[in-house]
Image (tube, rainbow, N blue to C red):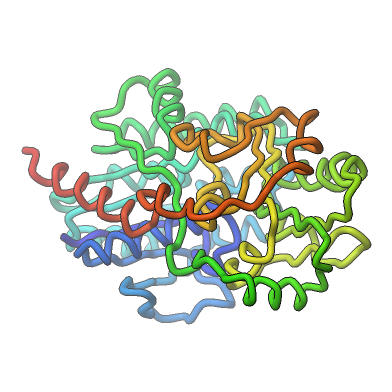
Length: 377
């Protein structure tokens, strides 16, 4: 099976959930036996030519619209709209001529639905829906919400209707897309997951060493939050700093990882920005939190928290997509977060219960879906 995965943003570094999902599902597919090429816009951190990484081939491309999100930002015009302005010039034509070599062509996000109908040969078309984009844009602050959401909805509608298979992160997203745009030809749910190589449990000696390197005192409660730059993650950091920490009576330190906050060390807050390896932070933390109040899709961070065996306090919204694992978490509204976090005890041996969320296991499931899709006439 040959799979072409088209991703509208630079795939590396893995700084937000969309990149993590697309990259690790590609790697999981390759581990399951597929030959996977991943095409994405070139970025200064990427080589100009194709390169191999973890069993997949990454093929950067340079199109005129690639630079628009960097120039215009994401506060006024959604990046998906900016990328959709790419004209059908020689670059896209050359990319889509390649599709005749593949059995399955994935389109992540809905930036290029017009390209989906131009796929060559007998390849099956898959729309990889990371969110319900219409709802996601409508919830963002600072955007011309109504107009932008309508424009994105038109892109999303075309993507859903053009696809032979729509893959969502959650059953709720699948139902919402069907409600908005009608039932697709076929639909499936592949949740977000965790990298089994990045969440190995640390013993007490290693954990103590990692905490010391971070400047954490033995008696400090280390509260971990991981998030990208989406507005709901930035809002979550403000809540944790301004409302959670002041209401925890015991010594506590907030560890913030990702682009949801600029790097800094400020009193009870240690913000690290993007890190290449999450495992040391998972090992050093005492409790992980997900105090988000909006969003679509599901949060990669929750699978990583659970796989590391951390106690988790999450809002009901933060649990979306992982309802089957609710018994491993404490689900609380924001008003109950300080009490829930303060009384957490570090559990042991939970990783085996969430093994089905590893990217390798999810890649095998996706490979099975594609095998079934290709068997249909």
